[in-house]
Length: 116
Image 1 (tube, rainbow, N blue to C red):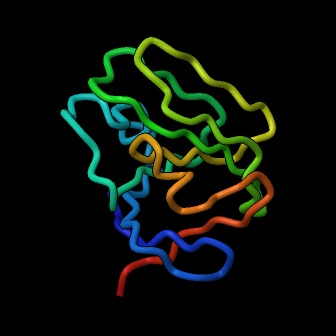
Image 2 (image 1 turned 45 degrees about the vertical axis):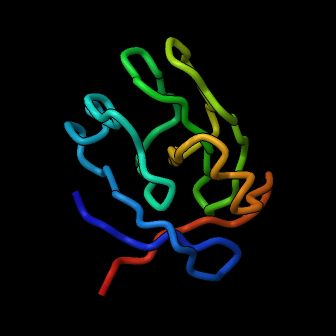
C-alpha cells in the first residue's frame, strides 16, 4: 500500500493517506485495526460502496467523483453499516469527526499526492 498526503482545495493537509488501489487492500480496508489516528486516512479506489461490519471504531466516509469532488460525507459511521454512492470513483475513510475538523464540505476537491 502506498502512502501520500491528502490535498484539500489545492492545499496539502496534515493527513497521511494510505492508498488502497489493489483489490486485496480494498477488501481488507480498516478491518483488524483497533483505531485510526486522527492524522491518517484510507483512500479506496475504485470504490463506490463501503461497509463497517467488524469495525471497532466509528469513521467518517467521504465519496469522491472522478474529478476529485466530494459527493457525500457520512459522519461518525458506526459498525454494521453499508454505504453506497453509485456515482463515486473513490471513498476516503477518516477517523470520526475528521471531516468536520478539516472543514471538508460537499463539492470540495480532494486528491492525494505521493510522498517524496
